[in-house]
Length: 339
Image (cartoon, rainbow, N blue to C red; front, side, top):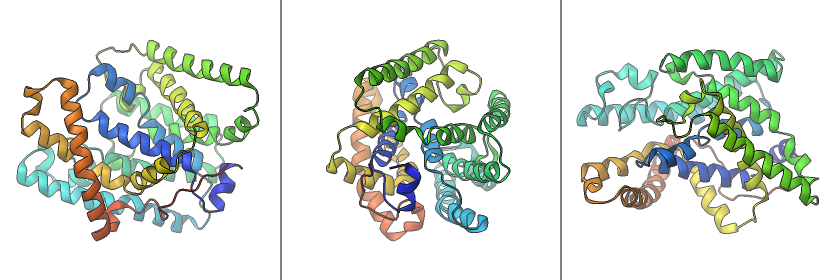
């Protein structure tokens, strides 16, 4: 069944939730102090794929534009503002971020306990990505033209190291549009499942495209393959596109597990809380000096253990007391598989 029909039936798509949960775990994992080689493998796709999946699932406003944007603002911007206030006052008290002296910076650029823009920039970026998507469809802008229109300012702003004001950056619309273009492909793939030769060719092509992109990108070239780096490095951009397509296909046809579906549903339903809370164990581990007493991978293991101990009860508690901080991304806790 096509994705759009599944959405109109108001059913969860289990493999999408599983992939989102997997990438959220990678997001936490990537902030624990990994080696550059491992970090580049994670960063080569773990943020682009969130835009990619949003593009796959986009099916128009379904209502008035004002109501649609109001719904997106409620789910993304209000939690962003509340989290920014919390982080601003905590950073101001602990002096953990240079921008703690500016409340305007907390709202315009986001602020994290670790300093800089933090992980919350993604909330406003995703909101503006949906704004661009609605505008593109209302103006009937072709896919290829949207890719060009989004890539040029993305290259300019990232190349000159400009902070995305209010989360506006064009990396989101770029990968979102590619996700929209990919939208109808899963139905085509379903018809090819009986042909093993085609699947081998598809797997070789995707793996080869990803490896070629990483090689062209200069991996590991003393750079982090994040979204900013992709804007002016065609290799890492190619790797990100092939990785997004490959992961969607892998998760779509992996054997289904009800336990994994339940865990993924919990992670996805608390996504914003996880984004906001996951820096605390990292800071705690660094403050306690764990890194000086253990190897790099031992430190990563300790931090990930602390993340589990910290995030699960804390996100559950805050989600119950202040559900608006969670953004209410998911109304249903039960994941339904759609074939």
